[in-house]
Amino acid sequence: MSSDESDDGEDESEEVVAISPSEEQSDSYEVFTPEQIVSFMSKVIRETNSFLHFPKTTTRTILHGFKWNIENLLERYYDGSQDKISQEAHVESPFKKQPIKHAMNKLSKEDLQLEYCGICMNEQPSNNMGNAECGHWFCRNCLCEYLSLKIVEEGVSQTVEFLTFKCGVFFSDTTVLDLANDSKVLLKYHQLITNSFVECNMFLRWCPGVGCNNGIRLDNFSSLTVQCKCGEIFCFKCGLLGGHNPISCSIYNQWIKKCNDESETLFWFAVHKKLCPKCFVFIEKNEGCNHMIYERASCGYRSHL
Image (cartoon, rainbow, N blue to C red; front, side):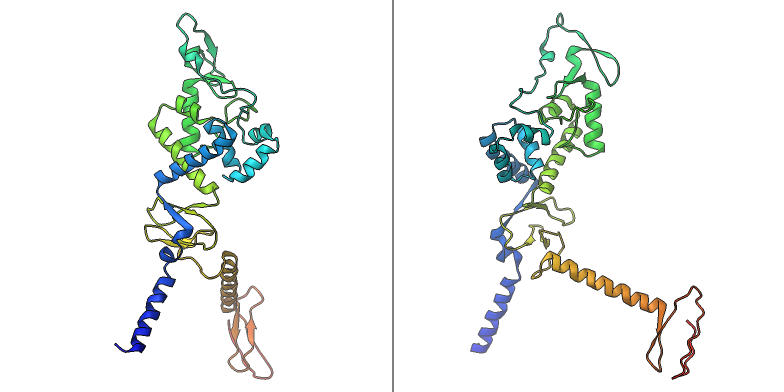
């Protein structure tokens, strides 16, 4: 093989490596399975709780409100805004009181009393009542139906608010797991929490590939074109399949808008105008009737549009 042919072969191999996102950019992102995403979320909660020492659900709900930005949360926390942080996240402040346990379930039959449920308007034994961290009580059957409605039908997980008027406190994981007795409801609940974690976190994104359940975790924004293990290549920021290197998302969107505007302009010209074959002047239809006669003294051309 000649030296020229050898050089050409080296150039071709370099080009292949340069256009492969999996080889060139794999150090800037990771591909996670759904199970790994759940583990990563738990790890973030544990790391944050090493500073906050809150209940797990409280920490997760607060992190969700801060879009899982630990630095911003800790900055607010050490500024002395602990109670305000809990209030904005719609959780009961751990500094005020501990979550109320379901102690009614452990009472003896002699100690049981009838409690009034504000939903079904029936009196229920106290061991058949459920409560949230706010301390409001309703019968467990009504709470189970309410959770099923919010979680399964409405797709709400992070912000399932308690039923009392102007209560403002969200259900915790402990309360949901204690009250929900349907495996489908619990499965949907965990799926929604995981999905919310990915969509709310600026460093995570689901793969847009058909049938793919993987997620991408970006370590830095040095390169935004990523490749999932399923083979799908896309832009991490805007989700465009195939990516749009080397231009940014904003420049790509401007280019698409410009192309669409030009296409619409050409379509309008095709519908409303016709070019005179003699003087090359556009004839415009500017009234409602489709019948139009164009007359120009210099060329004497007549046309029906």
